Length: 242
Length: 304
Image (cartoon, rainbow over all chains, first blue to last red; front, side, top):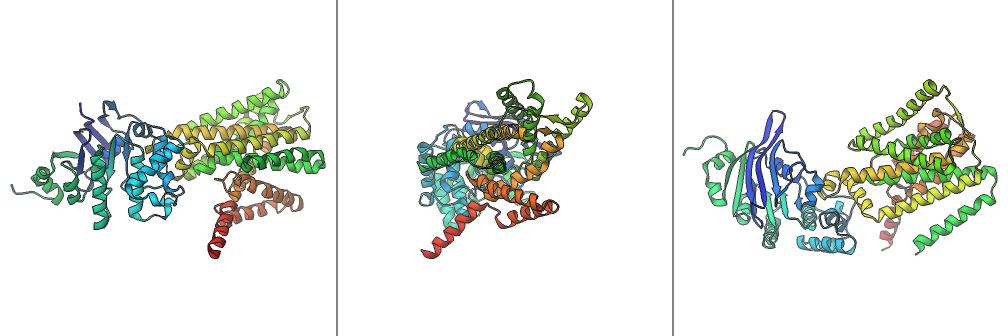
């Protein structure tokens, strides 16, 4: 039994099969990249795992617990934390409060000083601890992204789902972001990351799964998958001469 | 400590005021205490979640009507208990069905709910009992009504203070900012919203029940008057619906202004009311407390 098991997951939107019979697994402590061209179903798959969307059919299990059919908050309390493709911060709360909520309402249900300590620890990890009292509305884009990651980390999750967390960063910020994710990986966290930046994927993920038009077209070590003609054609379009 | 002692001293002073004021003064005090209760109870749910409810009068009127129906068959305490149970049950059923509506849909629904309850009771009274109006004869003095309402207002504010510091309060604030983040952070949206909605509704119902002997004659068009819902919202917004003392700060002056307007300009009163609503929304969109803080902050910034 693997740590995260996605077994023939299907998501149907009317006539569109956004996720079609996708199966793969993650082992504990693994960092796996989820690749694919725009509209291939990556975010939908992340939404199925985190419960944002109910699966049409199939099974998703975390450490043996069936996540499919559970509500978003139950899945969060089971240890699944995520960031959003379009950053979502809570503008009326301070940074430390923004981060504390997952510590308070997550599976450990911290409160008071303990919740604050977990939140400050997460802010420290992403490099925002010196601004813990600031309102989230006053942050720059990169700092909002950091804040979102800190919120996910304060949940002390079993698995972290990153939805293009590195997108939109400048080269310096990107290098910092990659280093940060590497630190998390070294800390033993299991990470499934949707990512378009191939350099970052090569640097972080020993293995990738690739989707196209809702289907899984590759599940292999990163170098092999990226050289796969199917994958190249999915990204570049058209037929590939073999 | 002053956070607790000052309000307690204020409460004690307010409790002895009816021993010295005239009947008219006492009437004003009851009205003010009623609106402080309504606005604070409304803000308990709507202030943090930003679910703007116009159903205040649905619960207020239900409370008053419960007393009108039961006051000759049950003791006063039992009547209040029944009112609280009925208000809470309506809120539970309605909440389960509708708290997934958001924004303007929830506003419209809540407004419709008040009308629905009013029409149902009217239909029932006309077709089943054959009488539209009812009388409330209770052996309760005006002072006792005031003390009860003052007590309910104090309980509402104390409860709000406690909720603000609790997990429930934090969950409500997160829901007000972003429900998606709230759910993915582990907050059970349905349970949190329902709990706050029911708590708020029980207080609104009790306020209607306690104040009902003042009406003496009760019929649906009197106790289900939608103006009560609008006044409650505008009072809470004026002071600041997400602050502990915001609804109180909005309710007292606005109630006095409304009283003055309605006795001096009975014909043009609704027009002035409308202008006041617009004024509040335009001039102090975040409430008086937040605006004052911002002004003070600016002054401080200019000095420093």
